[in-house]
Structures are given as structure tokens and as C-alpha cells.
Image (cartoon, rainbow over all chains, first blue to last red; front, side, top):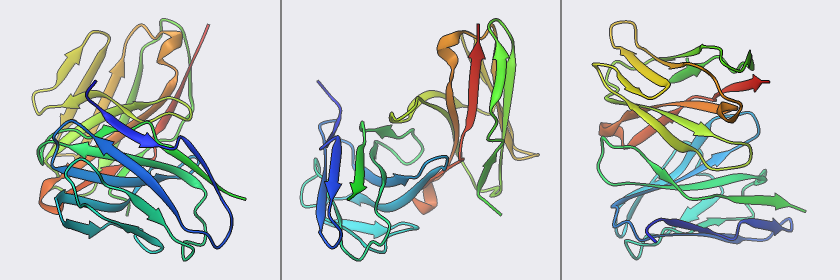
Length: 112
Length: 110
């Protein structure tokens, strides 16, 4: 099936730990995005990538890092520098600049 | 000022009612507009794109007013299954960005 796969669905992190969220797509889309959603709030852009080996910071990149070594994959690392990482993380792709975004099912990260 | 603003609601309506949401955007360079639906603890899913000429899909009608910089969503004959949060999304491709509203919550009651 074509689509966007995020894993894991739920993730628990201890304070001071780095964790990596996976996002894989087989839609052959060039653009990929990471968003964070907090309860009752809109989506905020963390990082985005338009092509392989290139990515740009979004509005809230501090404490996060990404890589784009393959077109299909855009993993997000939540580092210990991110002071309030508990949130719902959504990966999205886009085929062309004027088209809609497609979302993965999300990863719910909780700091314990 | 936020890029995209929506009334958070909730809008509580009975089944069969007609309900309308508006969304304003601040940047006139915005080029693409969308309505997404998000169910509780799920990912957003595209409901419909919004074209300059307006568009309709069954019970749903979306309109764009560039002069006043707002988009609207009209839902006719509301169903219980329409209960969700509706996100207004604006795309500015020159900036490689989507701007999301914080969503309008709709509760359709029996």
C-alpha cells in the first residue's frame, strides 16, 4: 500500500535521553515535513526537506535534528536539549509546492 | 498576528443542522488553501481543497474570498460522524510552508 508510515505510535522517553522518530514514505514525494501538535493547538513546523540531503529549520527547530539521506526517509531526533518534548509528532509529505500535505498516523511522545 | 486564525468553538449543533466555519489568513501572498478534518488523537486528513471559484463535495462547500482574506466551510445536514476538529490550512509555496489554524471543534448532537 502507498502511504506514510510513522513509528513507533507511542514512545516514552526518560529525561536526558535522545529518541528518534521514524517517518518512511513510498509515495515518491519530494517534500517531507515534521510538525508538532500540542493539545488544543495548531501544528507547528519543526523541520522540512524539499530534496534528498537538504533540509531547513522550521519555526521550532531548537532541540530537534533531522536527516534526509534517502528520498523515502526523514527521521526526527528529539534531543535532550528539547525541554518540553511531550507532544504529538506528525510527519507529512507533499508532491508539489501547491498541493495538499499527506500525513502519517503520528507518534505520541511522552517524557516520563 | 497569527498567519491563520480560526474560532476554536466548540460549535454544538443538532443533527441535520447547517453549520459554517470561517478562517482568516494574514498574508495576501498565500496561494493554496485547504480544509482538513482531525479526529481526536488522530492525524489530519484532507477534507477538501479550496479554489477561487469555490467548490462543493456532497454536503460540504468551501469558499475563498481573496479580497477579504478568508476561507469558509459550510456543512449541510450535519451527521453525528461530522463531529471532529476542522483545520484551516494555507500554503505559501515560496516559503515552503503550510500554515495551520488551531482548529474549530464541531460537536453534532443527536
